Image (cartoon, rainbow over all chains, first blue to last red; front, side, top):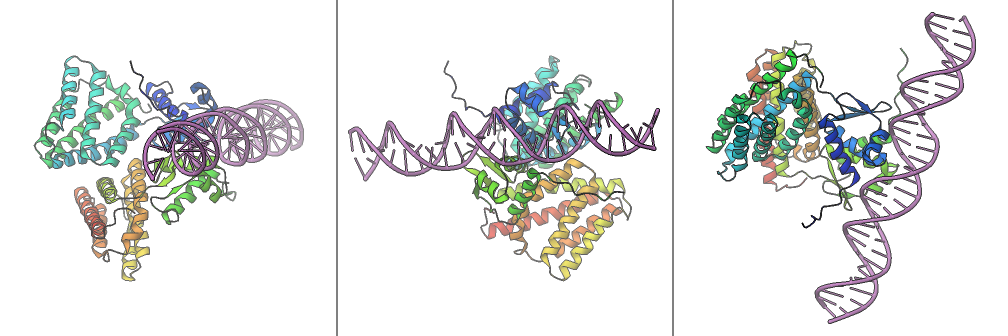
Length: 225
Length: 225
DNA sequence: GCATTTATTTGCGTATGCATTAATGAATGC
DNA sequence: GCATTCATTAATGCATACGCAAATAAATGC
Protein backbone atom coordinates (compact mmCIF):
# COMPACT_ATOMS: atom_id res chain seq x y z
CA UNK A 1 0.00 0.00 0.00
CA UNK A 2 1.24 3.42 -0.84
CA UNK A 3 2.22 5.32 2.22
CA UNK A 4 0.24 8.48 2.45
CA UNK A 5 2.61 11.44 2.40
CA UNK A 6 1.27 12.53 5.77
CA UNK A 7 2.48 15.84 6.96
CA UNK A 8 5.04 15.48 9.74
CA UNK A 9 2.67 16.98 12.32
CA UNK A 10 4.39 19.02 14.98
CA UNK A 11 4.72 17.95 18.57
CA UNK A 12 2.39 20.74 19.60
CA UNK A 13 -0.29 19.36 17.30
CA UNK A 14 0.31 15.86 18.56
CA UNK A 15 0.02 17.10 22.11
CA UNK A 16 -3.30 18.77 21.32
CA UNK A 17 -4.73 15.62 19.81
CA UNK A 18 -3.37 13.26 22.42
CA UNK A 19 -4.44 15.42 25.31
CA UNK A 20 -7.92 15.66 23.84
CA UNK A 21 -8.02 11.90 23.49
CA UNK A 22 -6.84 11.45 27.06
CA UNK A 23 -9.48 13.86 28.29
CA UNK A 24 -12.34 12.33 26.33
CA UNK A 25 -11.38 8.81 27.29
CA UNK A 26 -11.42 9.86 30.91
CA UNK A 27 -7.78 8.91 31.24
CA UNK A 28 -7.30 12.42 32.47
CA UNK A 29 -10.35 12.62 34.64
CA UNK A 30 -12.51 15.65 35.27
CA UNK A 31 -11.18 17.83 38.02
CA UNK A 32 -7.78 16.21 38.13
CA UNK A 33 -4.55 18.22 38.18
CA UNK A 34 -1.44 17.45 36.20
CA UNK A 35 1.98 19.01 36.16
CA UNK A 36 3.27 20.18 32.86
CA UNK A 37 6.35 18.04 33.34
CA UNK A 38 4.19 14.98 34.03
CA UNK A 39 2.24 15.43 30.84
CA UNK A 40 5.41 16.16 28.93
CA UNK A 41 6.97 12.91 30.05
CA UNK A 42 3.77 11.03 29.36
CA UNK A 43 3.68 12.32 25.81
CA UNK A 44 7.39 11.89 25.29
CA UNK A 45 8.23 15.49 24.57
CA UNK A 46 9.45 18.58 26.39
CA UNK A 47 7.30 21.02 28.32
CA UNK A 48 7.27 23.60 25.57
CA UNK A 49 4.86 21.90 23.13
CA UNK A 50 2.78 20.67 26.04
CA UNK A 51 2.38 24.22 27.31
CA UNK A 52 1.40 25.42 23.85
CA UNK A 53 -1.14 22.64 23.53
CA UNK A 54 -2.52 23.39 26.97
CA UNK A 55 -2.89 27.05 26.08
CA UNK A 56 -4.89 26.07 23.03
CA UNK A 57 -7.10 23.65 24.91
CA UNK A 58 -7.63 26.24 27.61
CA UNK A 59 -9.07 28.48 24.90
CA UNK A 60 -11.45 25.68 24.01
CA UNK A 61 -12.67 25.41 27.56
CA UNK A 62 -11.37 21.91 28.15
CA UNK A 63 -8.84 22.71 30.83
CA UNK A 64 -7.41 25.46 32.92
CA UNK A 65 -3.81 26.36 33.68
CA UNK A 66 -3.34 27.46 37.24
CA UNK A 67 0.14 28.54 38.26
CA UNK A 68 1.68 26.06 40.72
CA UNK A 69 -1.43 23.91 40.73
CA UNK A 70 -0.87 22.29 37.41
CA UNK A 71 -3.17 21.81 34.48
CA UNK A 72 -6.69 21.11 35.66
CA UNK A 73 -9.16 19.19 33.53
CA UNK A 74 -12.36 21.16 33.80
CA UNK A 75 -15.33 19.30 35.22
CA UNK A 76 -18.81 19.89 33.85
CA UNK A 77 -21.49 20.82 36.35
CA UNK A 78 -25.21 20.68 35.80
CA UNK A 79 -25.13 24.43 35.37
CA UNK A 80 -22.45 24.13 32.71
CA UNK A 81 -24.51 21.55 30.94
CA UNK A 82 -27.52 23.84 30.95
CA UNK A 83 -25.45 26.72 29.62
CA UNK A 84 -23.96 24.65 26.87
CA UNK A 85 -27.24 23.20 25.72
CA UNK A 86 -28.74 26.65 25.70
CA UNK A 87 -26.07 27.86 23.33
CA UNK A 88 -26.32 24.76 21.16
CA UNK A 89 -30.10 25.00 20.97
CA UNK A 90 -29.95 28.57 19.84
CA UNK A 91 -27.15 28.32 17.32
CA UNK A 92 -28.15 25.00 15.81
CA UNK A 93 -31.72 26.16 15.37
CA UNK A 94 -30.40 29.14 13.51
CA UNK A 95 -28.25 26.86 11.40
CA UNK A 96 -31.29 24.72 10.62
CA UNK A 97 -33.24 27.79 9.54
CA UNK A 98 -30.38 28.95 7.38
CA UNK A 99 -29.98 25.53 5.82
CA UNK A 100 -33.67 25.53 4.95
CA UNK A 101 -33.40 28.97 3.44
CA UNK A 102 -30.37 28.05 1.35
CA UNK A 103 -32.46 25.47 -0.49
CA UNK A 104 -30.20 22.44 -0.75
CA UNK A 105 -31.12 19.65 -3.11
CA UNK A 106 -31.28 15.99 -2.09
CA UNK A 107 -27.71 15.33 -3.10
CA UNK A 108 -26.44 18.09 -0.86
CA UNK A 109 -28.47 16.69 2.00
CA UNK A 110 -27.31 13.12 1.54
CA UNK A 111 -24.91 13.15 4.49
CA UNK A 112 -27.67 14.41 6.70
CA UNK A 113 -30.01 11.70 5.43
CA UNK A 114 -27.32 9.10 5.91
CA UNK A 115 -26.79 10.13 9.52
CA UNK A 116 -30.51 9.72 10.14
CA UNK A 117 -30.56 6.28 8.57
CA UNK A 118 -27.56 5.26 10.63
CA UNK A 119 -29.28 6.43 13.77
CA UNK A 120 -32.36 4.40 12.91
CA UNK A 121 -30.25 1.33 12.31
CA UNK A 122 -28.25 1.83 15.49
CA UNK A 123 -31.42 2.33 17.45
CA UNK A 124 -33.00 -0.82 16.04
CA UNK A 125 -29.89 -2.72 17.03
CA UNK A 126 -29.77 -0.89 20.34
CA UNK A 127 -26.20 0.11 19.72
CA UNK A 128 -25.96 3.30 21.68
CA UNK A 129 -22.37 4.14 20.84
CA UNK A 130 -23.09 3.91 17.16
CA UNK A 131 -26.22 5.97 17.65
CA UNK A 132 -24.29 8.67 19.45
CA UNK A 133 -21.69 8.75 16.71
CA UNK A 134 -24.34 9.19 14.04
CA UNK A 135 -26.11 11.77 16.17
CA UNK A 136 -22.89 13.76 16.37
CA UNK A 137 -22.60 13.49 12.64
CA UNK A 138 -26.15 14.75 12.14
CA UNK A 139 -25.62 17.80 14.29
CA UNK A 140 -22.22 18.59 12.80
CA UNK A 141 -23.60 18.26 9.29
CA UNK A 142 -26.60 20.41 10.11
CA UNK A 143 -24.36 23.15 11.38
CA UNK A 144 -22.14 22.80 8.34
CA UNK A 145 -25.13 23.20 6.05
CA UNK A 146 -26.03 26.35 7.94
CA UNK A 147 -23.00 27.88 6.32
CA UNK A 148 -21.79 30.06 9.17
CA UNK A 149 -18.24 29.08 10.04
CA UNK A 150 -18.37 30.70 13.45
CA UNK A 151 -21.48 28.81 14.44
CA UNK A 152 -19.72 25.68 13.31
CA UNK A 153 -16.67 26.41 15.44
CA UNK A 154 -18.64 27.38 18.51
CA UNK A 155 -20.94 24.39 18.26
CA UNK A 156 -17.96 22.06 17.91
CA UNK A 157 -16.43 23.60 21.00
CA UNK A 158 -19.61 23.17 23.01
CA UNK A 159 -20.00 19.58 21.88
CA UNK A 160 -16.44 18.88 22.94
CA UNK A 161 -17.11 20.27 26.36
CA UNK A 162 -19.98 17.85 26.99
CA UNK A 163 -18.46 14.89 25.21
CA UNK A 164 -17.01 13.41 28.37
CA UNK A 165 -20.32 13.73 30.16
CA UNK A 166 -22.22 12.03 27.39
CA UNK A 167 -20.44 8.76 28.01
CA UNK A 168 -22.13 8.83 31.39
CA UNK A 169 -25.59 9.99 30.37
CA UNK A 170 -25.85 7.92 27.23
CA UNK A 171 -26.55 4.72 29.10
CA UNK A 172 -28.79 6.32 31.65
CA UNK A 173 -31.38 7.68 29.32
CA UNK A 174 -34.16 5.72 27.65
CA UNK A 175 -33.73 4.78 24.00
CA UNK A 176 -33.85 8.05 22.06
CA UNK A 177 -36.66 7.12 19.73
CA UNK A 178 -38.27 10.54 19.91
CA UNK A 179 -34.92 12.02 18.98
CA UNK A 180 -34.90 10.17 15.69
CA UNK A 181 -38.36 11.41 14.80
CA UNK A 182 -37.19 14.93 15.55
CA UNK A 183 -34.23 14.58 13.25
CA UNK A 184 -36.43 13.43 10.45
CA UNK A 185 -38.79 16.35 10.94
CA UNK A 186 -35.89 18.79 10.81
CA UNK A 187 -34.55 17.10 7.72
CA UNK A 188 -37.91 17.30 5.98
CA UNK A 189 -38.31 20.95 6.86
CA UNK A 190 -34.90 21.79 5.44
CA UNK A 191 -35.55 19.73 2.35
CA UNK A 192 -38.78 21.54 1.66
CA UNK A 193 -37.32 24.93 2.42
CA UNK A 194 -39.60 25.57 5.36
CA UNK A 195 -37.39 27.95 7.32
CA UNK A 196 -39.43 28.51 10.46
CA UNK A 197 -40.46 24.89 10.81
CA UNK A 198 -36.84 23.82 10.54
CA UNK A 199 -35.89 26.28 13.25
CA UNK A 200 -38.72 25.36 15.59
CA UNK A 201 -38.51 21.63 15.13
CA UNK A 202 -34.84 21.70 15.86
CA UNK A 203 -35.30 23.96 18.83
CA UNK A 204 -37.90 21.60 20.27
CA UNK A 205 -35.58 18.71 19.66
CA UNK A 206 -32.67 20.28 21.50
CA UNK A 207 -34.81 21.51 24.34
CA UNK A 208 -36.29 18.07 24.83
CA UNK A 209 -32.84 16.52 24.85
CA UNK A 210 -31.61 19.13 27.27
CA UNK A 211 -34.50 18.47 29.65
CA UNK A 212 -33.85 14.76 29.62
CA UNK A 213 -30.14 15.13 30.28
CA UNK A 214 -30.48 17.77 32.98
CA UNK A 215 -33.24 15.75 34.57
CA UNK A 216 -31.05 12.69 34.67
CA UNK A 217 -28.13 14.57 36.13
CA UNK A 218 -30.23 16.06 38.88
CA UNK A 219 -31.97 12.80 39.62
CA UNK A 220 -28.68 10.99 40.00
CA UNK A 221 -27.04 13.88 41.82
CA UNK A 222 -24.29 14.02 39.24
CA UNK A 223 -23.03 17.49 39.78
CA UNK A 224 -19.50 17.16 38.53
CA UNK A 225 -18.41 15.09 35.59
CA UNK B 1 -7.38 45.07 54.99
CA UNK B 2 -3.97 45.19 53.51
CA UNK B 3 -3.48 47.45 50.59
CA UNK B 4 -3.81 45.34 47.51
CA UNK B 5 -0.49 44.98 45.80
CA UNK B 6 -0.87 45.00 42.05
CA UNK B 7 0.12 41.59 40.82
CA UNK B 8 3.33 41.54 38.82
CA UNK B 9 1.53 40.37 35.65
CA UNK B 10 3.47 37.91 33.55
CA UNK B 11 5.08 38.74 30.24
CA UNK B 12 2.63 36.45 28.49
CA UNK B 13 -0.27 38.42 29.92
CA UNK B 14 1.37 41.69 29.00
CA UNK B 15 1.90 40.39 25.51
CA UNK B 16 -1.76 39.45 25.21
CA UNK B 17 -2.93 42.88 26.33
CA UNK B 18 -0.41 44.81 24.32
CA UNK B 19 -0.99 42.81 21.16
CA UNK B 20 -4.72 43.32 21.53
CA UNK B 21 -4.17 47.04 21.96
CA UNK B 22 -1.92 47.15 18.90
CA UNK B 23 -4.50 45.26 16.87
CA UNK B 24 -7.46 47.38 17.93
CA UNK B 25 -5.57 50.60 17.41
CA UNK B 26 -4.72 49.49 13.91
CA UNK B 27 -1.05 49.69 14.71
CA UNK B 28 -0.94 46.10 13.59
CA UNK B 29 -3.20 46.45 10.60
CA UNK B 30 -5.62 43.90 9.26
CA UNK B 31 -4.00 41.41 6.96
CA UNK B 32 -0.46 42.31 7.93
CA UNK B 33 2.16 39.69 8.77
CA UNK B 34 4.64 39.91 11.59
CA UNK B 35 7.51 37.70 12.56
CA UNK B 36 7.49 36.39 16.08
CA UNK B 37 10.95 37.85 16.58
CA UNK B 38 9.73 41.26 15.41
CA UNK B 39 6.89 41.29 17.87
CA UNK B 40 9.14 40.01 20.63
CA UNK B 41 11.56 42.82 20.09
CA UNK B 42 8.76 45.33 19.89
CA UNK B 43 7.36 44.20 23.21
CA UNK B 44 10.77 43.91 24.81
CA UNK B 45 10.63 40.23 25.61
CA UNK B 46 11.67 36.91 24.13
CA UNK B 47 9.76 34.88 21.59
CA UNK B 48 8.40 32.45 24.13
CA UNK B 49 5.78 34.66 25.81
CA UNK B 50 4.92 36.20 22.44
CA UNK B 51 4.20 32.78 21.02
CA UNK B 52 2.06 31.91 24.00
CA UNK B 53 0.13 35.13 23.64
CA UNK B 54 -0.29 34.58 19.93
CA UNK B 55 -1.64 31.08 20.56
CA UNK B 56 -4.21 32.55 22.90
CA UNK B 57 -5.22 35.29 20.52
CA UNK B 58 -5.43 32.78 17.72
CA UNK B 59 -8.04 30.98 19.80
CA UNK B 60 -9.95 34.21 20.03
CA UNK B 61 -9.99 34.62 16.28
CA UNK B 62 -7.90 37.74 16.21
CA UNK B 63 -4.89 36.38 14.39
CA UNK B 64 -3.49 33.34 12.72
CA UNK B 65 -0.09 31.72 13.05
CA UNK B 66 1.21 30.46 9.77
CA UNK B 67 4.59 28.73 9.77
CA UNK B 68 7.17 30.78 7.87
CA UNK B 69 4.66 33.48 7.02
CA UNK B 70 4.55 35.03 10.43
CA UNK B 71 1.65 36.03 12.60
CA UNK B 72 -1.17 37.37 10.45
CA UNK B 73 -3.70 39.81 11.81
CA UNK B 74 -7.00 38.50 10.54
CA UNK B 75 -8.97 40.87 8.34
CA UNK B 76 -12.74 41.01 8.57
CA UNK B 77 -14.67 40.53 5.35
CA UNK B 78 -18.28 41.41 4.74
CA UNK B 79 -19.06 37.73 5.08
CA UNK B 80 -17.31 37.60 8.44
CA UNK B 81 -19.26 40.60 9.58
CA UNK B 82 -22.52 38.93 8.61
CA UNK B 83 -21.54 35.75 10.40
CA UNK B 84 -20.58 37.57 13.55
CA UNK B 85 -23.71 39.67 13.69
CA UNK B 86 -25.78 36.58 13.15
CA UNK B 87 -24.23 34.95 16.19
CA UNK B 88 -24.52 38.10 18.26
CA UNK B 89 -28.15 38.60 17.29
CA UNK B 90 -29.05 35.11 18.31
CA UNK B 91 -27.15 34.89 21.56
CA UNK B 92 -27.87 38.39 22.80
CA UNK B 93 -31.58 37.97 22.11
CA UNK B 94 -31.49 34.84 24.19
CA UNK B 95 -29.67 36.73 26.91
CA UNK B 96 -32.31 39.44 26.81
CA UNK B 97 -35.06 36.86 27.16
CA UNK B 98 -33.27 35.21 30.05
CA UNK B 99 -32.69 38.54 31.75
CA UNK B 100 -36.40 39.29 31.48
CA UNK B 101 -37.28 35.92 32.91
CA UNK B 102 -34.88 36.30 35.83
CA UNK B 103 -36.88 39.31 37.02
CA UNK B 104 -34.26 41.84 38.02
CA UNK B 105 -35.27 44.84 40.07
CA UNK B 106 -34.39 48.42 39.16
CA UNK B 107 -31.22 48.40 41.21
CA UNK B 108 -29.90 45.37 39.39
CA UNK B 109 -30.69 47.05 36.07
CA UNK B 110 -29.04 50.34 36.97
CA UNK B 111 -25.92 49.74 34.87
CA UNK B 112 -28.09 48.96 31.90
CA UNK B 113 -30.11 52.13 32.48
CA UNK B 114 -26.94 54.13 32.91
CA UNK B 115 -25.58 52.90 29.59
CA UNK B 116 -28.79 54.00 27.90
CA UNK B 117 -28.62 57.43 29.47
CA UNK B 118 -25.01 57.78 28.44
CA UNK B 119 -25.91 56.87 24.90
CA UNK B 120 -28.63 59.47 24.84
CA UNK B 121 -26.25 62.11 26.14
CA UNK B 122 -23.53 61.12 23.69
CA UNK B 123 -26.01 61.18 20.85
CA UNK B 124 -27.28 64.62 21.79
CA UNK B 125 -23.70 65.87 21.84
CA UNK B 126 -22.96 63.93 18.67
CA UNK B 127 -20.00 62.28 20.30
CA UNK B 128 -19.83 59.03 18.43
CA UNK B 129 -16.89 57.55 20.30
CA UNK B 130 -18.63 58.04 23.60
CA UNK B 131 -21.81 56.61 22.14
CA UNK B 132 -20.00 53.52 20.92
CA UNK B 133 -18.40 53.02 24.30
CA UNK B 134 -21.77 53.20 26.05
CA UNK B 135 -23.28 50.94 23.40
CA UNK B 136 -20.61 48.35 24.15
CA UNK B 137 -21.41 48.69 27.80
CA UNK B 138 -25.11 48.16 27.17
CA UNK B 139 -24.58 44.99 25.20
CA UNK B 140 -22.00 43.61 27.63
CA UNK B 141 -24.28 44.31 30.57
CA UNK B 142 -27.25 42.77 28.82
CA UNK B 143 -25.33 39.60 28.21
CA UNK B 144 -24.08 39.61 31.80
CA UNK B 145 -27.65 39.88 33.07
CA UNK B 146 -28.54 36.92 30.89
CA UNK B 147 -26.50 34.87 33.31
CA UNK B 148 -24.94 32.39 30.90
CA UNK B 149 -21.17 32.65 31.17
CA UNK B 150 -20.58 30.97 27.84
CA UNK B 151 -22.80 33.40 26.01
CA UNK B 152 -20.89 36.16 27.71
CA UNK B 153 -17.55 34.79 26.59
CA UNK B 154 -18.67 34.12 23.03
CA UNK B 155 -20.29 37.53 22.66
CA UNK B 156 -17.16 39.22 23.96
CA UNK B 157 -15.11 37.32 21.43
CA UNK B 158 -17.38 38.29 18.56
CA UNK B 159 -17.38 41.91 19.63
CA UNK B 160 -13.60 41.88 19.72
CA UNK B 161 -13.46 40.53 16.22
CA UNK B 162 -15.47 43.41 14.82
CA UNK B 163 -14.00 46.08 17.06
CA UNK B 164 -11.41 47.16 14.54
CA UNK B 165 -14.00 47.44 11.80
CA UNK B 166 -16.30 49.57 13.91
CA UNK B 167 -13.82 52.39 13.94
CA UNK B 168 -14.40 52.53 10.20
CA UNK B 169 -18.15 52.09 10.09
CA UNK B 170 -18.94 54.29 13.06
CA UNK B 171 -18.42 57.49 11.15
CA UNK B 172 -20.06 56.28 7.99
CA UNK B 173 -23.44 55.52 9.41
CA UNK B 174 -26.17 58.02 10.21
CA UNK B 175 -26.67 59.00 13.84
CA UNK B 176 -27.99 55.90 15.58
CA UNK B 177 -31.15 57.44 16.98
CA UNK B 178 -33.25 54.39 16.23
CA UNK B 179 -30.69 52.34 18.09
CA UNK B 180 -31.32 54.24 21.28
CA UNK B 181 -35.04 53.73 21.05
CA UNK B 182 -34.42 50.03 20.58
CA UNK B 183 -32.27 49.87 23.68
CA UNK B 184 -34.95 51.52 25.72
CA UNK B 185 -37.57 49.09 24.47
CA UNK B 186 -35.39 46.14 25.40
CA UNK B 187 -34.74 47.64 28.80
CA UNK B 188 -38.43 48.15 29.46
CA UNK B 189 -39.27 44.63 28.39
CA UNK B 190 -36.64 43.19 30.73
CA UNK B 191 -37.78 45.43 33.54
CA UNK B 192 -41.38 44.32 33.18
CA UNK B 193 -40.42 40.69 32.78
CA UNK B 194 -41.81 40.41 29.28
CA UNK B 195 -39.65 37.59 28.02
CA UNK B 196 -40.71 37.33 24.41
CA UNK B 197 -40.85 41.06 23.86
CA UNK B 198 -37.34 41.41 25.23
CA UNK B 199 -36.11 38.74 22.87
CA UNK B 200 -37.89 40.08 19.83
CA UNK B 201 -37.10 43.73 20.42
CA UNK B 202 -33.45 42.93 20.82
CA UNK B 203 -33.45 40.71 17.80
CA UNK B 204 -34.98 43.47 15.71
CA UNK B 205 -32.42 45.86 17.07
CA UNK B 206 -29.45 43.71 16.14
CA UNK B 207 -30.85 42.82 12.75
CA UNK B 208 -31.41 46.47 11.93
CA UNK B 209 -27.87 47.32 13.01
CA UNK B 210 -26.51 44.44 10.99
CA UNK B 211 -28.37 45.55 7.87
CA UNK B 212 -27.05 49.06 8.19
CA UNK B 213 -23.46 47.96 8.67
CA UNK B 214 -23.48 45.36 5.94
CA UNK B 215 -25.18 47.80 3.61
CA UNK B 216 -22.51 50.39 4.26
CA UNK B 217 -19.70 47.93 3.71
CA UNK B 218 -21.13 46.76 0.43
CA UNK B 219 -21.90 50.26 -0.74
CA UNK B 220 -18.36 51.39 -0.08
CA UNK B 221 -16.87 48.16 -1.38
CA UNK B 222 -15.08 47.60 1.91
CA UNK B 223 -14.42 43.93 1.70
CA UNK B 224 -11.45 43.65 3.97
CA UNK B 225 -10.91 45.54 7.14
C1' DG C 1 16.65 33.19 -22.06
C1' DC C 2 14.32 29.60 -19.40
C1' DA C 3 14.15 25.63 -16.52
C1' DT C 4 16.20 23.00 -13.06
C1' DT C 5 19.34 22.07 -9.62
C1' DT C 6 22.12 23.51 -5.82
C1' DA C 7 23.48 26.67 -2.17
C1' DT C 8 22.12 29.98 1.31
C1' DT C 9 19.33 32.20 4.29
C1' DT C 10 15.75 32.62 7.46
C1' DG C 11 12.14 31.64 10.78
C1' DC C 12 10.12 28.21 13.42
C1' DG C 13 9.67 24.19 16.61
C1' DT C 14 11.31 22.55 20.57
C1' DA C 15 14.76 21.18 24.13
C1' DT C 16 17.17 23.03 27.94
C1' DG C 17 18.50 25.74 31.91
C1' DC C 18 17.74 28.95 35.33
C1' DA C 19 15.77 32.67 38.23
C1' DT C 20 11.58 33.58 40.54
C1' DT C 21 8.07 32.76 43.65
C1' DA C 22 4.36 30.07 45.62
C1' DA C 23 3.64 26.14 48.52
C1' DT C 24 5.23 23.20 52.09
C1' DG C 25 7.38 21.94 56.16
C1' DA C 26 10.52 23.06 60.04
C1' DA C 27 11.86 25.87 63.65
C1' DT C 28 11.12 29.31 66.90
C1' DG C 29 8.76 32.26 70.29
C1' DC C 30 4.96 33.08 73.26
C1' DG D 1 -0.36 24.07 72.16
C1' DC D 2 -0.68 27.54 68.75
C1' DA D 3 0.79 31.02 65.83
C1' DT D 4 4.51 33.10 63.33
C1' DT D 5 8.69 33.29 60.95
C1' DC D 6 12.09 31.19 58.35
C1' DA D 7 14.08 27.62 55.35
C1' DT D 8 13.30 24.29 51.71
C1' DT D 9 11.35 22.49 47.81
C1' DA D 10 9.47 22.52 43.52
C1' DA D 11 6.83 24.23 39.43
C1' DT D 12 6.47 27.79 36.59
C1' DG D 13 7.70 31.74 33.35
C1' DC D 14 10.81 32.83 30.28
C1' DA D 15 15.37 33.46 27.94
C1' DT D 16 18.30 31.09 25.03
C1' DA D 17 20.22 27.91 21.66
C1' DC D 18 20.06 25.07 17.85
C1' DG D 19 18.61 21.78 14.10
C1' DC D 20 15.60 21.54 10.37
C1' DA D 21 12.64 22.62 6.77
C1' DA D 22 10.85 26.13 3.78
C1' DA D 23 11.72 30.02 1.11
C1' DT D 24 14.80 32.48 -1.62
C1' DA D 25 18.79 33.29 -4.28
C1' DA D 26 22.51 31.63 -7.08
C1' DA D 27 24.36 28.64 -10.29
C1' DT D 28 24.23 25.45 -13.74
C1' DG D 29 22.62 23.11 -17.92
C1' DC D 30 20.15 23.26 -22.09
